[in-house]
Image 1 (cartoon, rainbow over the protein chains, first blue to last red):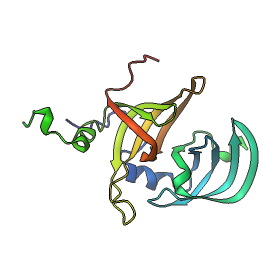
Image 2: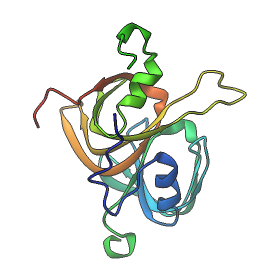
Image 3: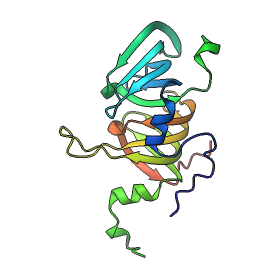
Image 4: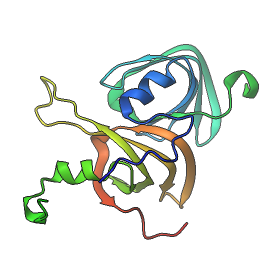
Length: 91
Length: 93
């Protein structure tokens, strides 16, 4: 079976490529609790520990808090997603 | 071609799904559907069994009142994965 990456245009293929490509970009991090964090990804590691900048905390889709710098311990992370809107535009 | 399904290891089955649609059922009322782009095997001192991180594109279906979130590309933590279904969800949406 081929690994057909036919629709990945500007995006990447493997998880490793994905991780390289999202550093410094706006991301959405969802925790197991359902809370979302939106901000600029500063760095992350193999445990999915994450450091973020200009972080906004969303509970049930509502902005609850803002943090300049935030560290999220990886065990709480459900997923990391790219965010289409840039933080500068949206915030 | 080794085609006896009984001789296919579960991890090999998942590797064969790379590039195609997959339906990920999580523990606790969460599901995701998307295209599997790859996975991460993470052997570690504290985790003798690997924890798969699956990178999934497209949408998330949350069953808490069926809230649907569409996402472009994500890195999913494998900790809470319950079932992986090759071929995607039967739900057309």
